Length: 203
Length: 203
Image 1 (spheres, rainbow over the protein chains, first blue to last red):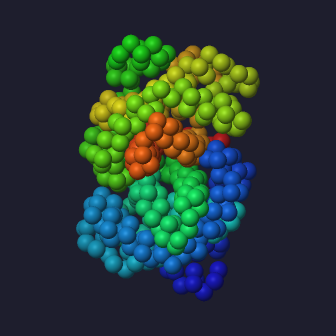
Image 2 (tube, each protein chain N blue to C red):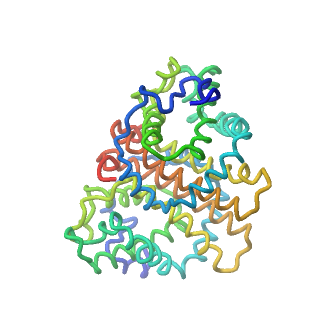
């Protein structure tokens, strides 16, 4: 962990307190095969990392302030239970959201990464939501809303990948790799959610 | 139901035997908002329908024979329990797979559509898999494998949408609408799976 990531509140990638993934590396390999995720995709994610690095604050602000803030059933998950804003909670989770973009591009997809996918998922379920930041907010984010919003993230990501002057073929390949990774992650997050059943309520 | 769809074995869209969705139209509307799915996407799906109509056999053959057949942990779901081929089961489910592409583009997303999403999901869980075709195959398709393979379907769909001479802007918009619909569908399918927990095993 470098000095930058150390300063992100509640971000503890690779630390002992992180959840253990129930998914093995062999099962991850099968998932990669199912999604058509190859070494080429790893290559283009590594290319995408530096492209996105200077933009993550802007990207997350766009998602959170321009889109989610206008959708009450999504915005409530970063607010207090009475619906009032909680700027500190929002700011802390935004920093982690930004780092997640970089982790998606630059981290090796190894056991630590698998474990952090489990941690991310649990922090959206009633098992761990709100605990990291000591807040009282919605008990969980329904899985279906996450899957639906990934459509928005994937779509908007195209422009950010194109923002640093790469050729259209490279942008297409970076975007393809991003989308495939998100499918891997949605599959991994589902596994944590299945144990709570929290796609089942409050769509 | 017209004469074409009536001839698809086990396809019973809109009939009384179809499962009832636990999702309301209001909840579907919220999901659409989360995914950024708008009337423009409906428009471009309606445009995509006729583009894909003549190609559905080729598309499903590509997915099933060129891709899934080479991935044992996916191929087994259309085979007998001992791993031997079951060509009749495969052929029947391929016909429904083809029709699903058209339904995604051309059906109104109303209560009947919601109900059939539930039916589709249940037919991939141990609640209804194998029953429609009276076969003995794997008990269920893990949800994570479906989510992962949607990445492949979304990616390959681009070329089929471009195959009938539409301009690149129209192709991009048709593809965007397709992907958003798949996110809605993954969210709806998850709801059925949450009740069985069958993302949780055998990734």
